[in-house]
Image (cartoon, rainbow, N blue to C red; front, side, top):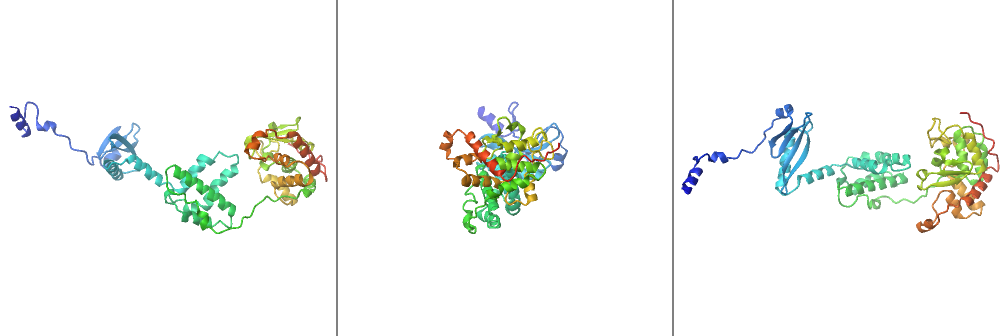
Length: 420
């Protein structure tokens, strides 16, 4: 009886309520969607096309493609992209490719990530590094702007569109060779930045192998090292310069005279605020965030330096040497104007060198005191760990002597009153 039932079942005959048709599997979907259906689809849901491809429609009417399949025994869903940007034909090609990768034991998700990484251009990589590691991370905004600007000028036009995985040493060499001898400092910075960008790209998985910047200098022409120092006015001419600056009206001239008397950097003087200055204690304390080394620096103020501050007091509630706009920091070019007006040689930063030369040739103060007065680090890491004092009293004596020297040919008291 059992054998007969099986024979009848296989022959398609009904056995009770069961039949062969009852167990017939539905046919697999294949190209179930059409471009017209895709464009007109408004009902929310997921609509199958075949080969794991689905059109997903959200409650808001947004439509995108999705692929579903089995990868290494597990269900996986991957987004393909917006149906507004990717048409049905392209979505089907991607779905078929991913299905074939999964069937052959691969991982479509990994392949998709690899394709995205390989498409990253040098310019895109550099801008990402700049945004993540440079922009807003430095105390020097000029450096941050320059970091990207020099790549835009010297690297991007030639190799910016090349994917990072396709860059080689000849590409980098072509960029650097144009500026290697003519603009050595710029070439060195461009090389360093390209190395950083491509090191990041390798770490992030966008490329592999040796960084093409490494060893590229072997293909570049030799150049003689030419140390570049800031032009400095000889210290013997400082008294005459101070005397001439006394006759120049305006805040920039006062700021420049204060800079000379304190031997500080331009940015430190231009950014000085009244909250940093303790007149009674004859002390100016610059926060670490405004210092090149990132450490707070105390500047002893001589009587002439304090006299200059009294003549700018009241011009601005925040800035000691304000710009034309209240509360703004004076531009770095503005403080140079008095030097150009008088035809003084050297640079603003060079006055620090003038001070240092004077310390060596005209005083008996130890080298360490002169260096700390310039906010330079002295000694190695171990020495600095034990040398906790900034030798303020001795530095105060040094700065008083410097002020007397600077004014030996004139008087800082003859300051033109400034109106608010």
